[in-house]
Structure formats: structure tokens, C-alpha cells
Image (cartoon, rainbow, N blue to C red; front, side, top):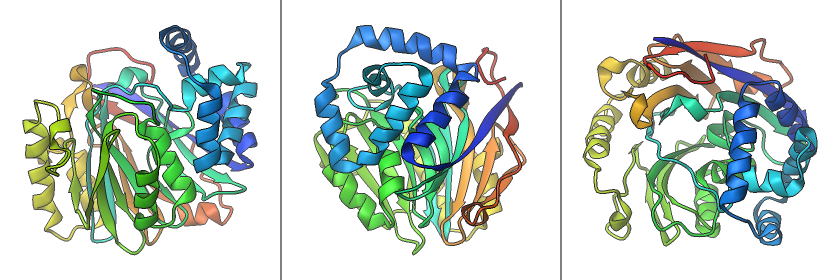
Length: 347
């Protein structure tokens, strides 16, 4: 078992100021060297149409562009480099797992990935314009999962990277939803309107307990309303051809999740279901880029959250409502352990 942690960052202000803060905190962390190396490699791998990317942001969420400007200044990078690396447009995300249950007022999720490139940052972010949110960061400005001040929760679930087209990647799409949508229906409308780079499921839940799974790919969108569970394959006949050939594990995991969705469980009971390996939802396949790194449980109506790092972890309770009222979370780092023999940044 290796020690593992997530840093907690808290920010309030303009998008530009939040970008400055995110860059300063990145430079203080061991992740910065890895991001510098990745930036050099990705700049050689592909070019972006800078004007086109800016136009997309101006159409869907223009203020995030200001966050990219602040991030570039803080890092000492050109704006082109920051947009190329963090805008999530025309970039590629590697495979990941992920499970979610959303009913009875609780949204529970595991994020399954490889620890080597995991950012490991929980952000409590309150921009001057746009909805405040709490969630795990991905590609700096993006979110892996999160809940906003209106109680809307989103998570994403990898399906396939083949036949990628120009569009946004999952983590930036999740951030767009959190910053601009108040309900599941509004999130569905946004997911229908934006260009998607890859095939992903998006699990949604709001304060009115309206849930949905949105199947999204560059070739279309299918919506399953009032869905209670989500894994890593498409269910619709229209998009099922986008699934990877090996979906047996995902289908089995979805059946397990659907079974547990029929029971009424509290937030802490759902947390244990996802974080205790004995129940079969938590995954340990880190060498295959499919080990659980964090468990999050959100309660949209009360704006409360539970966060666990690694396996069988004692959850950290977070009252996002109190934070929105001005109370600062008095914690800067959350520790846990994962069963991996490989070395990685967050130890």
C-alpha cells in the first residue's frame, strides 16, 4: 500500500484571478515538471486553430477564456501554449473507468485511472460570474466530477477514443456544465449543443432529484432520463457500435450498481459501497489504468459532500453550503492509500 493524497485549493474572485491562483499552486507542486514535459510533447504532436478554439469558448462559456489567460500569465507561458494544453479542444484523454449511482438524493462516484498523471486536486471555486462549484480538477480548468451551488452534479465515464473529431474533451465539458447549468435538463441541452472530441457517458443529478445519463460522441447524443446508474459503455442501439469490444466488465459492474440502486442508502452507506473493495465497485487494476483513485459522494439538496482518497478511506465531510456563505475549509490536504507497486507523483 502506498500513501496517496489530494490537495485542496480554495478560490474566490474573477475567472482571471482564479486562473492566476491555479497557476501559482501548480508551480508549487511536483505536477508542474510533468505538465512542462507533457506540454513540450503535445506541442510537437498537433496544432490547434487558436481563433476557432476562442470562438467556441466565446459561444459556450466566454469567461473560462479569462481563466486560461490568468493561467498563462501565472505559468509564464504564451496564451497559445496554455490553450493548447488546457482548453480540452482537439486533445486526447487516455482511457479511464468510473462508476456512478444517482438516486434517493445521493450521487456516488468512483474515478478509476492511473495514479501517475492524476492531478489530485479538489477545488472549491467561486467565480464572480458563473456558478460556484466543488469538484476534482482535470486538465487544470476542467473537472473530473463536481457539484455546483445549484446542486447540479456531473461525472463522466470513458467509452471510446476511436474516430475522434474536433471538439472538447470530457473534463472541460464537465466544467462548462457546472459553471453554466442549474438543472439536469439544462445540462442535457448544453451537452447536445457542444462539439465532443470522444465517446463518453455523462451522469447527471440535480437538487430536484432528476437524473440522466447522456451518451455523447462526435456522431450523436442519446439521453436516458431518470437513470440510476452509469458505467463505461453505451446502452442505446443508436450508439452501441461505439463501444469497445471488451465491455463485459463494464456491463457486469452496471448490473451490480443497478442492484444496489434498488436499496435506499444514506450518503455514508453509498460511500462505503463505493470505497470498500469488498462490494465489487472499487477497482485495483492500477497497472491497467483502471484503479480507483478517489470516491466522491454528493448530496445535491443539502450541498454536502464526502471525499475519500484511495481504498477503505475515512471520508472527509464537506459542507459546500457553509463554504459558499464565506466559511473557509480548514484543510489543505486529504490522505489515503492505494495498492500499487508503481511510483507516482502523489505519495
